[in-house]
Length: 426
Ligand code: ADP
Image (cartoon, rainbow, N blue to C red; front, top):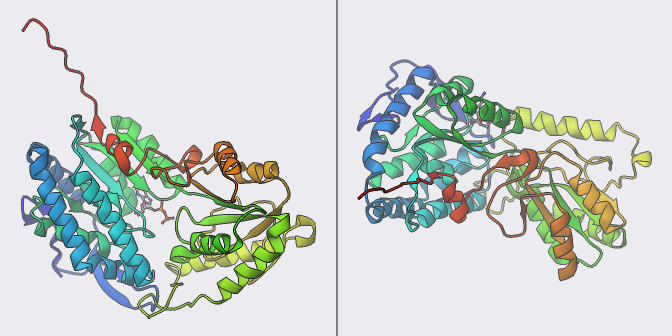
């Protein structure tokens, strides 16, 4: 098997003659899609050198010139839609969601293609990416390490970068032994920034490791998103919204509603309408017409959700004050763990103060959602919630959910250094 995805000045540097790779599986069917090489320190070090060499020429292109390549890359991503199919196949999400995801990721490239900056680029950037969202801004970084479960979308997008004329070496994909790859990236003084999306534990390790060479770090870590439905909410909107917030990508997103707090006065109506809507969802292979719920990523993810349900149902629910609606039991003391699966705990509350307290009672601080028709209340509650995103804002969390912002002017600043130049005696 030959691998032609890791490039150095146009030449492939990872060639495998025997199989020492990793199978990539379709989680909907369990079938093998293909295999990819298993890389480690050596290939990562080669990729860093390749990026470092490419950086010197790529970063010196004038902005309008670089913009043309990025724009072409964007066009290829949205017109070929190839990466949508890989995202569907290797991750299992419904095709419609995969299309949305790839379009969203491509928008970052389009936005930054058109944005000029007077600051200097930080240097070689390494992105370590997760399996649940595969094609975000991370793929415009110099060295990308996708999740071992979902390497194909990164490869599809990287191949399109080459087709767009982006020089070989400007973008490298390495996949394999995560700690080895991570350590090599962290130890390299040439890598000036690490951007990571994944678990809070790994994020903390990377942040500590980055200190050795004083790298910039952007972290998008776990969430524990509360969704608060007040008595005065528009019921239909709240049900539709919570359904989307909870079940997009089968609950496997960092901003998925992890805890749905519903006020006393609307609770019965909401839980009835919500469970009806959940029952109506079509579960199946993401490629099948009408599927809105695909599989979980793998057996371990299924077992985790099962154990959360078992844990909750083994508790004394009468004392916990939790109302069980459909498909399992949940206790009301707050889901401190991120579920990352299609389980929607509904928790009843009486007062605004109580809802805010329960919503904030977590180390996470990524996203929070509010359903109310009262503008004054939405401002008040937004201010009180300790979350990085409430409504429309640049992507990024606070507390232990992350560091830095993605997208917008603020996202670009994360990849820049402000340079002070003092001119004297001229
Ligand atoms: P998840 O539990 O959602 O898979 P992880 O944080 O384990 O989240 O994984 C996110 C990304 O981080 C993946 O690409 C994974 O391979 C990578 N990763 C996991 N452990 C390490 C590590 N020690 N160093 C660097 N990257 C890692």
